[in-house]
Length: 375
Ligand code: SF4
Image (cartoon, rainbow, N blue to C red; front, side):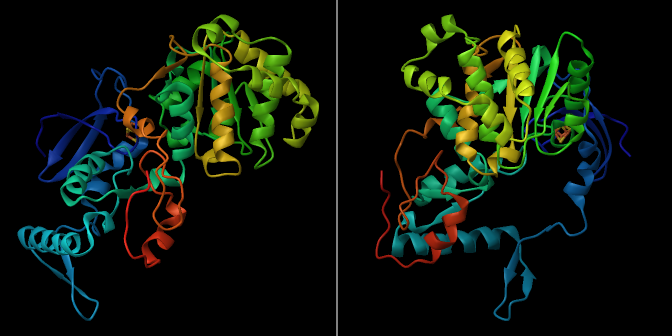
């Protein structure tokens, strides 16, 4: 084993913790957190310890494979593979136009380099339609982010007085810097609160100060009831809204009319739980909120994303320490959401440049005479 620790980053989730590795040939023999890393500060989760498995596992392809006529595969070298793929793609482009080439990829784990490289290839080919795993869950939230905030707001849980997780279990899934450390710090501090809205008693819910154990699929009732309390009890940040919001009258009218007790009951919760949580979020000096797949792959996902964002917008928890702040790197994901581009076959809305995953088979298999972007 080479005795030198080398600095790199874990790419298994979007947090991208700084790590150091020791190598044994092409194998990652040892992994530890990089104590000098500005955000992860020596923390790696258990997944990083398995990096060598992802890098060098037995069934990982080490050369390109070409399918033979009988369905079996043969190994070929890289020059042959890239040459043949390029020639075939050029053939399709010349015959049917680059817009008939659909690109799927670039949204895997915390390594989005595939998306960057893919964009260059697509430009060269003239390919205009693409998708990836993000279109299964995230585009609804991206759309709401773009319209409400003009970009992607990210939470500052390390400094938040109140942390709210909706359909999210960072103890397991991470997506939050030094998740277990930060969650424990919040939960153990009598001046802070950890609020979890989730039907499951997850590890995060287990240590939460407030667990709203909603009935599956009723998150919209729970979130609307919390917002209803905020508006009805006048707990909202008027100064923030005067400066940063517009056309809120219609929203306030709708929230004033929310029957809080009824919505709480529909969500399987006690009214007092809703009222307590609403007051906690609204009265905190700072609050940060994060949603995840629990609501994004559930009923009314886009409505839930909208209501979830209102929790921090109505309380002025935006653009300050311990609250929500605009992300720079993922800005592009929300920038295309105002365009009304649709798919060529079904006319389905394309959000953040991604064709919805559930319509991809129909879009590919339905013969049409010519493909053109509907913008
Ligand atoms: S939280 Fe875990 S999986 Fe995510 S980047 Fe850090 S070490 Fe990797």
